Image 1 (cartoon, rainbow, N blue to C red):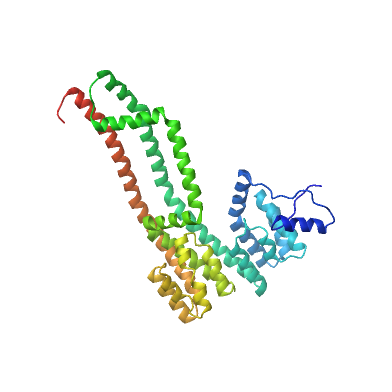
Image 2: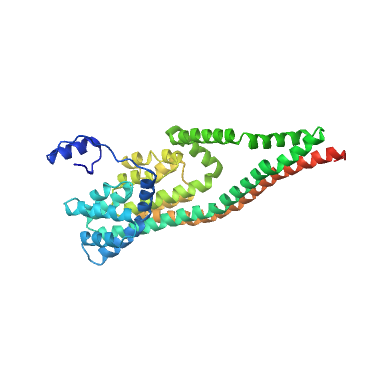
Amino acid sequence: MEGAVEAPDEQTAVQRLRNTGVIPLQVSRPKEDFRSRLALRSARAELLVFTTELSALLGAGLPLDRSLNIISEISESKEMRGVITAVLRAVREGSSFSDALQKHPRVFPKLYVNMVRAGEAGGVLDVVLEKLNEFLESSKELKDAVVTSMIYPAIFLFVGGISILVLLIFVLPKFSALFTEMGTTVPFMTRLVLGISTTLRDYWWAVFSGGAAVGMIAWNYFKTPEGKLQGDRLKLKIAGDLITKIETARFCRTLGTLLSSGVPLLQAIGNAREVVSNQVIANGLAGIARGAKEGKGISAPLTQSGVFPPLALSMIKVGEETGQLETMLIKVATTYEKNLRVALKRFISVLEPVIILAMGVVVIVIVLSILLAILSLLELPF
């Protein structure tokens, strides 16, 4: 017999198989290839659609299992359809909805599961799903705004880089042959540029291999905790204001949504801290749960951490004093998401001239080196 069994680890899988009366000969985790990773990302992207449809069906009065069955039939994603079917099967076998979702962490993140669990405990699952829908929509809009703003600079940088490589590899070697036939000494700048061109043309495989090796080493280093921390510090130095606004909006919206859904404060703080991607800021938020546990609230520990802007801290403090913390956190997130769009436009308006200037300087150096060599051949003053 061959098959698959859902379990958190191999030991649990072996035990479950033995409980069914069979003797397992070999148990191993399924290997994730590139296609399976793309499938998981596709299913994760369908999470907003799933939440919207489930919220609408539950709001219409349909039971959970009937709603999941309908969504599994109408889902356009094959991968998401399989996940929903597995969740439906677990629910019909007696598992709670949150526990069934927890078995698919690559599709349903921890904060999603915790909010669903809070909705189940309070009997307001449909309301919590509406809040989750709003949260996912806001997160998607924020992510789309960042990605859209970076498309044009990325394309410009790519096209400019290709143009410079064409100059160095295909155009300059023709001038190099001309200067060699003339047998005259060319200026130092021309020799330097022609040397770079010759190296790229004759040893492109070594340059490519060396660049790939350096890239792999850097990639592996930045995946380590220390490397990620150093990389996040560098990001803060380059675009600190932009990153701070992103993380402030992300943390406040997550925490506010969790609190308004009935998740306990300490658990909500832990979940909200996990969505902060920058490790420097996340480390600065480490003492918030401890401060809240000691009765200091969250505004004082946040102020001591020094990672959030003063306006956000003031608004959070007011919300805490008035007993409307979750409402004020959502307002902070909304405010900084609007500020982020303005900051993104400002950042792009500065980044584009910098890229143009850098590309222009490289092209001018190449053209000037050729012009100096031609003038030296003609023995004209420059």
